Length: 355
View 1 (cartoon, rainbow, N blue to C red):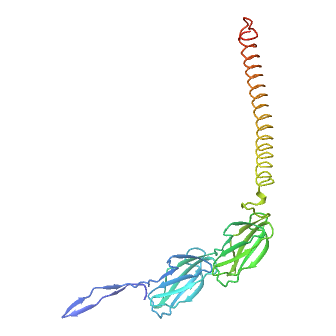
View 2 (view 1 turned 60 degrees about the vertical axis):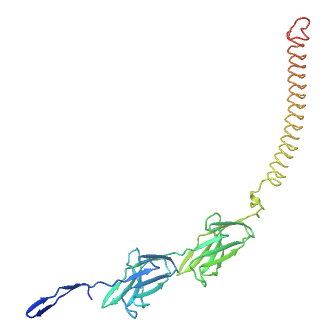
View 3 (view 1 turned 180 degrees about the vertical axis):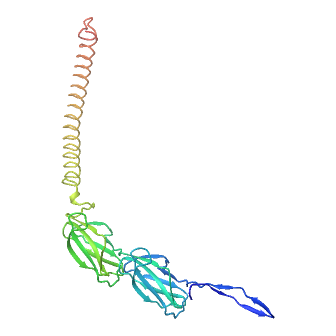
């Protein structure tokens, strides 16, 4: 039936009277044909080797033989492009049909369902299928970027991708690099057997220090695909118990920065236990030769800040025992050179504070 408008009317003569019917107009419309790809009626995105499931509905019968679908390859997101595939489609029931398609090459693919009826061609709106390169992942000791091991320590790899359980086009490559890039000389290339659908694993034990980029490769549909590389760093020396290596250990003879375990050759910052030769900050016990900041036991040679035991050579702030050379503030024991502070009564040089 063509897409145009038809008008119907009739006349009736009854007992000499002419009756005219109302005009009736009929306008045929195109059939409503729907199409979805992975439950979307506009677009779907998959990676290669991932099936796309289509469902279409329309006014056909269960045994209709005039149903088909078309898959095109487009340069943009339009519904045009070169026809890649045109296949007959058998209804699954009245007004319904379904089919599946697995792409092998990345690209933009508009898909239609067509129906021929009454000499006319009808089509569903197109659904755009975007096919991407495969998402191949790789981890080394559970890291998808890098792993650090010592020689003779195994590295465990796990990879995922859209391959089947019996795929024979999977492999891995190990290179030796001069830097942290993913290039370098190929040291090893081995076929890899999947452990299940979309998964594979392998192990490698390095014997030589260096930087080793590792890839997983997959050949599908005439194209080569690869995972991002994972960089394996193999150390020159084994790890210490604290998790470091001898390369980064403290530069002394024992445990810390000295031969015993502290920042000097013994236990602390000097030769013995502290900062001097015995255990403190001097060669004996403290900051001098005896144990304090001078040569004996206190800040002077005897035990205080002067030569005896206090602040002078005897024991006080002067040369004897007080603030002068004797006992007090003069040479005798008071504040003059005698005993007190004056020159009078025969006490000039003995007992008073004058001269």
